[in-house]
Length: 369
Image (spheres, rainbow, N blue to C red):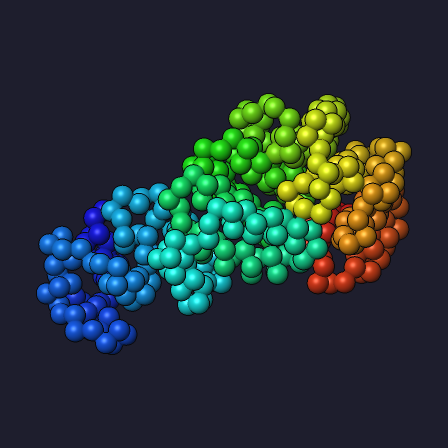
């Protein structure tokens, strides 16, 4: 689609004539644009410059990137997918302005994006889902205007993965759609590490939550097929697949995958303690604790819980709550359902509500079943 056709289509969707579009631009910007000039754009006789691209994007509510290039099919699809999934309700005019300003100025540098991602990785460990969702939505509006490089696609993929985690995996629409788009964006980056990590992080998120297990398996299998070299992404993928197997009752596969995950951890486990991009010793034990609790291995689960508590940073009380709720699940599975529910609910109630996560709420639902 050429720029003239795009302008014409967007004008038609908004019920504007060529004169009406010219009038809207003139009212907003004090210009003297005529119908004939709009007609010239649409017929391809001339192209709008930077000023009129900005004006058109505001009046037609369309990203400048889509108007600026005729061959931006992938970017337009990406933006349309964002709007059709979950971000549209939270985009206000100031967010759109941020995106357009980023496009015109060149936006954050690669180093700045990496610093932002590092910060979000740390904040995720302690902030609630609503806070993360609000902050990351703004970044997604900005990065969608910068998808001119492989690195930008990598940034988008990692942001989308984080954004997906602010929706319950059981939703089946929002979280899963974001995880799938994140995988597609990662593929556009061409970066093996990003492609594996995004899929692995989605797999462990869904597997840990016990939601959309088929999707968790597919993403884990894709990650494992892309690269077999031990990495945090591969570790997440294997453990996500292990949780899916345990929930289905396939304990033999879950045990095999756990051993595979422990091998990956030995090779790729991280020393960073408080980032969503890291899997230190305590976090590996949190994964293992829930897995073994689901399998009814009380002795192994308790050992993993004690090992996790020994190194869990005091600044991360939410994960201490996870471990307590794992014990509640063990009690419920051992036959004391009411006792298990009460134990887990007490642990959840002791955590300030603003630090609750969707994962904890889903775990509570699992204990009650």
